[in-house]
Length: 309
Image 1 (tube, one colour):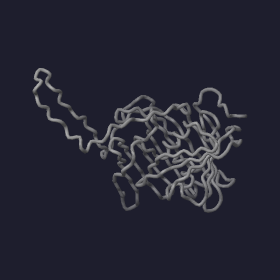
Image 2 (tube, one colour):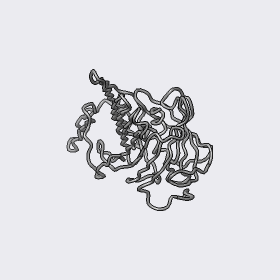
Image 3 (cartoon, one colour):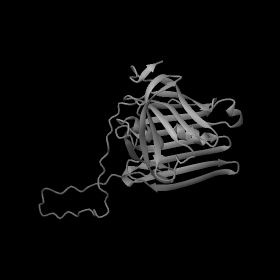
Image 4 (cartoon, one colour):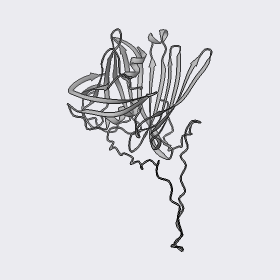
């Protein structure tokens, strides 16, 4: 049940982060990119022979993307109630908690949490935290951290993205009674690939229209997927946070992946520039899980698609 919950939340939520632009320490497995010193020719000697660098295997210079973002800003926090059928199972949050710097690049720090509520927590306690650090201008991934605590299952995942090398450096830690199982590996990914949380916030910035299909590259663990977002129709959704005019969308993967499950995953976003997720539903082995917005914080001004509080 909880794994489907995380799918619904796109790996959702917030311990407060200092909003100052503070450098994030690199992991031991991170690769340091060294600047290449170029020899300047001596203008006083026109006959001087300059040894040219070998450009045979040099990668072409990357052009970093820029994405116009009118959808979210620092300070936004969304709180959801998670229902299993008609019973409240947990609480989740999604928040843009600050701006940091990774490898000299300004990034948004996005954090999600998912926690079980009583009576579910008495049987299966959940406390999951996911952090995504996405480029402030291009909204692609620089770093991804996932800390899962689900019953007796404890796992940490850390990913550093190196777009210049088309590489994701992954560290996985599985905590067991007999000790910690550590795995480190590299995954070849296209430059500017997105983790699933970065992909969700990127979609919010796009001018979605009924009938649109948006495709992007998603990375998860050891795999790279072609993720398609289908925009179906306009609907009105009534939630604890109010009634909203919404766009109904569905994420689909070509082939197996994290969205391959028994039922469909459907998401309702506000039909305005903010594209706030107000409801998400998914089928599980028995029944449905619904995630419903109940509180909005940090959004200045009126939400255009809101019909009533």
